[in-house]
Image (cartoon, rainbow, N blue to C red; front, side, top):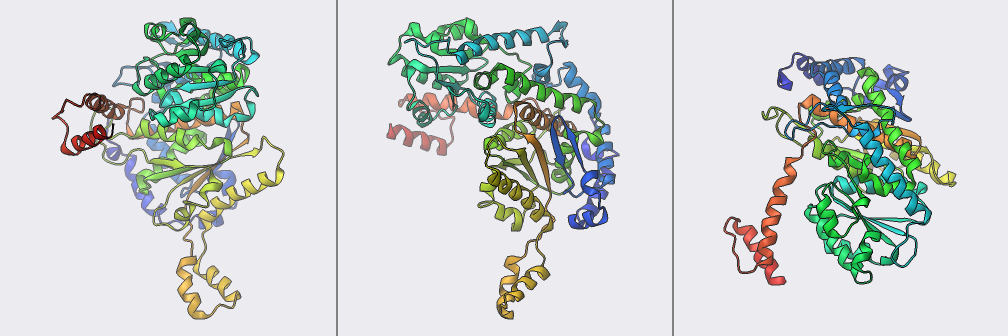
Length: 546
């Protein structure tokens, strides 16, 4: 494929960007009194205001021309239709199929995958109804009260984030816990206060060999057997896996093994049986609403023209700042406590997908790829890193996310929350000019020398971009749409950069070396000379501390 910078459509964008970097956002608003309506849209229950960005209709036209040159439409159809677009692993990428209605059909290698998906959803429905109704009993006859999901990466981040986000919908008897870190301190913290008689563990590992997950699963098993018997394991452990033999050997009844498929990548797997903790928490009716919300965004992404397509626009704007403005990071700022884990979820989604240095044909990228994604709940960030956003030397684009209607009745707090969200995007755009600061200080009758000394510290440059993403309420459907929005954003940017967004070979090297070092730590008589002197020294100190 032609290198990005060699495309005929790239040069006009490069020239246009040189001009756009000189624009002042406030001046763009002054020049177009309808700018908000011109640069905003609704889809799948979400509203996106992207007017506070350095772009015009010309910018969007040039960016969509580039998307056309990258054959985005054809690449999009290839994904939805099940072509093996994950070329390094020779796999289809069909997380979108998990959200299809039961009446749909999608053949993969001549086999319709929709009935398979519906069969797993039926299995999940039967199981979740038993747990939620209390008819599923632990070994002493009590109903389950605590559910511990043991997984890592996509088997942890998606379910953990979604369960936190949909907290108000959770069954009042059930408490959801997530154990991912191989650090034994997290094991202790998670198990502390739980009762084996009323605890259900979900071991989420496709192969049932993931080191961190299986170490934690064995630790949970040992903890459980201090009270229960091996014959009780089947009432307290279930698996999301495809390794029947390993699941059975662990002591889990294979009737309670929930499968998924190799065309579901880990960071896209919350829609599958990996979402079992979410289904248990909110119930299958709400889980199906969650799927429907994702499907609604799929339909919008698949059908809307690029210039009015929310995932495409979000991707093009992010690409614009990364490629032409040198923005190396992006902040995700949810103004909703229940979305506090969403930035962490997007870190994996974006950086594991597009944090690559070569194109699909193995050539080195001529420019940047994914930015660093970071963030936290916005109101907390305002009293921490927002100082850097307003007055630091780096210009960092921000995605503000909020729900207009809360799940509580504290109207004053909701008004304060939204006021802060909207004020921050306005402040980042407008800034505070020298003349404004000077006038304020003079009004306080401050001496001229003091004004001159303080002036540089009180000036805000402004002209800093942001998007604002709103939903009426945070519900299973709007959360599903929001996740799908960012999934498709990542896909579009991967197409623009010509990156395989669906492999993660960078994760593997550390795993291999960790296995070697673990063996060295266990056997103090060995000395693995393949390690460098620093690693050998660290191993020696760790051995001495054991």
